[in-house]
Length: 85
Image (cartoon, rainbow, N blue to C red; front, side, top):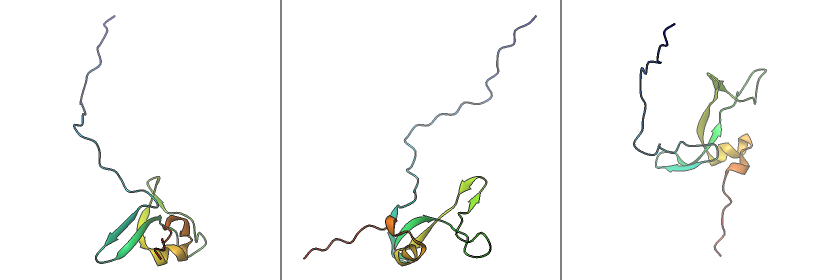
């Protein structure tokens, strides 16, 4: 009986810290679109209205304006305005 050693076909290594990926509730501000918040994509019409969209088993996200986030029920994702009186 002959013992066969496993064959290494590839080696993966990294040399730096991976880039932080955006998450739900993250904020950004662009010149073209202004202030935006990241939210899960939702079905807008049909019998599945309001349910989340996923592709290949992963949830889909999109950047939306603060006003649109409030309409969709994402008030908890938008930071509170501070009054400096």
